Length: 73
Image 1 (cartoon, rainbow, N blue to C red):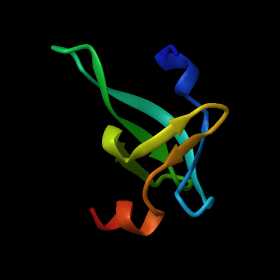
Image 2: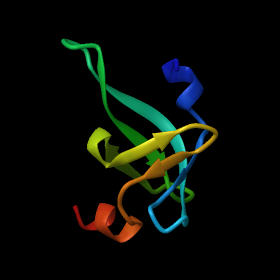
Image 3: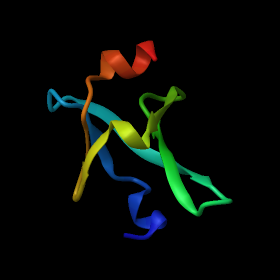
């Protein structure tokens, strides 16, 4: 999957609650590896989801963790 295909995908936590939408992708330029996703969670709120917290990527991005755990990290 290309990075531009991730932009705009809906993000859901492990409890199937909508977290937000993928706004941007963080990349390690030395390794050309995705390190995380920037998720828009409100009008101006954004949070970063680490690669380790992502369970599946398909029509939607499904996380391994709950939204509360991400906000506390």
